[in-house]
Length: 531
Ligand code: KIV
Ligand code: ZN
Image 1: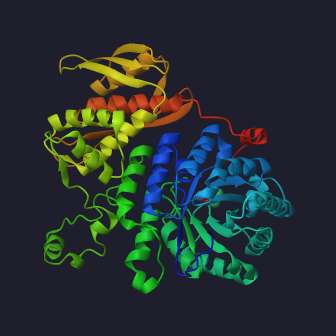
Image 2: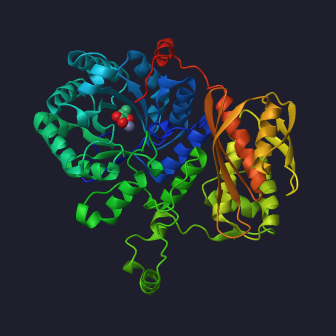
Image 3: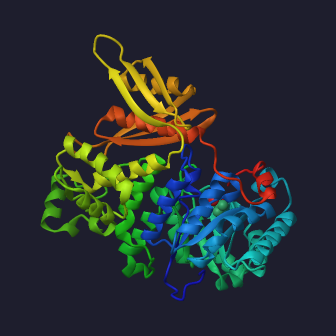
């Protein structure tokens, strides 16, 4: 599926798991990527760019797992124009052909800055590489996307020549990236208009846009692209991505939904799934959503001033252009209490999209009871945080926290003792006297595992309001030269911190998955510079 029959239908190409995952400090494992991909399918995106298979065996494994398991969207794998990249992408996505279908997305820069300084080659060579890449990919499948990287800083005539070649070789989607977030909306409109003039065949394929947010214009530029004729937007949940990120999916979608009468374009996104998808991505990546972020920030529908509150109480539309329920933000009703049983828990989790049974339900129920004993009301948001936490626990293949103790007093430095289960199942213990209880726990964990760690970030949030709210912690650290992030949830903030630290450590030191099927691909990955 590349060109929908409906000319007003905008395809949503989600790159949370590829460009989004390139954000510094994000290290999702296969299980976590699968969970996000399943939620993206529930959200109704058209294409999931699941990763860049050549970059590491772990990336390959995740793309393959997503292609095999996720029904609905097209599953795309990214590839440079190298034959090895394309083979790796094909091997990773090929099993998706029976479901939504597979796509190979190949790219090469057309700007002279990139051609001269990064690729250190010539325009002629770029044309040759584009031709060979699309032709090679076309041997495997029909659905090929081609991107001229850094197009907005490139000579439009030269970019047009390269696009014509890609279309002649069989590209079905042409994606124009504003790789460094440099363009302005009116300029982008003119650029795309000129491309249509120079390459009339662009009308036979799907035109796509991929805008970065370095100047805060990613959504505005994507919108300009749509007005110029593009019918696919590449975007990421919460706007994550390289540097300042990509166009935010929720902003693009809600712009089109809210102003549909004026714009006349629409997407297939189930907008009620937006808030949940945003929370899941934020939890698993450790990237917090700023409170005033459009659509999904916790204040996006909050009214502080008396005049605004008064207006909204009288008539919601006085100060709200969207209904919070349309993006799924009403879902914090009280669902369970400490007398609720296993069946009620299973039902509540199913309502949130988590099918839990057997041993997993036993574990979830034990965890739920511990929390319900300490917290009067367990809300949907709490359950969602717990379910994600359990998923992380099940997915983490490395170390696991067994127990910890802290002696803390205002008269002497806190002392922590911890027990951690190692990857081979052995019990490791450590102790440390630190500057504060969390510092003591973190160092005790490092002592137990024998791994030297540099803490980069530590954050504590509350899942809901109220004094008995669940605490949610996020840790980013460096261990053995690799960066790992981890999150933890508990009513006890020390326990949440300890869990997050152990998971971040496991993510940093975990072996990166299975090998790609093709040896050329593995060799090429050694010399890779990601976009
Ligand atoms: O920003 C960019 O140019 C990219 C391409 C791979 C599409 O991410
Ligand atoms: Zn990008």
